Image (cartoon, rainbow over the protein chains, first blue to last red):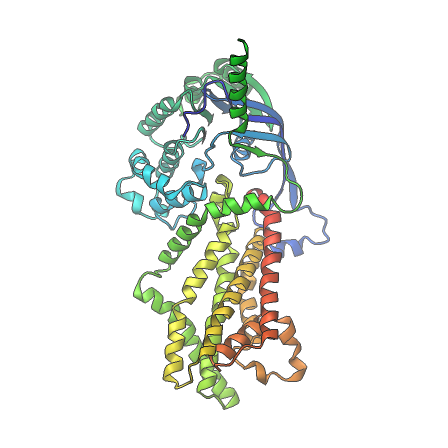
Length: 262
Length: 291
């Protein structure tokens, strides 16, 4: 399904993308709160300027790393590219099949088993039952959950969660693969394995977008890096240049800690 | 000579242009493109059924005792209410008991759809944040669960009616029409309240009271014919009235339907469904930042 894309062809085009949304200050907005605040003039919502005039093209055959501090808008941008959030301004064009199931979506219902969650998540993202069953063994094997795949996900550790999420994201091979920080929890061996998997997935007929705080991985895997800060694209270019600039900005230096974490 | 590569390049470009391109742009106020939405929802039909299935499994629907409990709950309630009626009014015959059971069962279909629909969106936070799919699939699937929980109560009602020695007849088949109308109404309420719950999270606190008030104002504990004239306005403002009365007419009394009443029931049902769907669809693109 993905061999029709040639290296250098455009995969994702993000033009002047802006995203502004209103969110509640209290996480849970209730009627009681609304009534309590009635007439007091206290604002219950605040405007979040999550993305502001971002221009970004991703070509097939490239691996784009996205770096930035917490709250930079990285995940938000991935959600716009996946069609989860509609942009406020600008335009996003996606030339191919994008992974609409971001890794974190796996395990949305903790009462259900890992297997049910994978199947439901896959079906929700628009895959057919056959496609999911076709990939299921591979997903379960890669996640190394063993018999726990049939246990309710409330019994999972955070590492198990992350492993399953990553496995789903990388096994159902879309043309445009988005991996959003799914690697950050997991033991050293699984990190190593995920890194190998990502390298294996780099190919001419696929575009890979990797969102991570693991600058070492970004340097190693990506051939293109974008640095977002507070919703704006600060720099785009060769991995080493951008990551160096980003590290200088963070003033953390190239210490082992930042590089090591996958 | 130079034309060939040009043509090739051109056709290559065309192929490139015609490839499935998803475009995400700011949405205008109101509804998303309905044709596209419907296709995308249709493509998720196995998600809807699978989700319903796993919910049913979680409530032990596929075991004998799970189903027994589903039936037992409204059955015990009807027994309690019947005793209450007997004590308060001193009257109560077998028709009254059949009416009470049948009406409670159907009331529970709508009320279950409403209760389970309430949190259908907000409890799927993770899925909504990380997957692109038509959100209406969520209340749709909880309503299917409510329907499946309703189904085993039909044979139970028929057994009760039979053992009470009441007449069976062809008019009882009209009940199917009423179940359909009740289902549309339940779905409409589920969709409406699922969207509302995103903005007002404590709706679920009001639900038990809402359920109770609706139950007492509907012809469940009493028959519609016994409502005095100065309370007749209830028939006009309570959507359960025409639905439950038609249901009782067909299933309990084995009478032909009153079409004016059915029309009013259908109007309530489809009206609620359309309004609920409109509100849901026009708001759902905001759910991802609100859940």
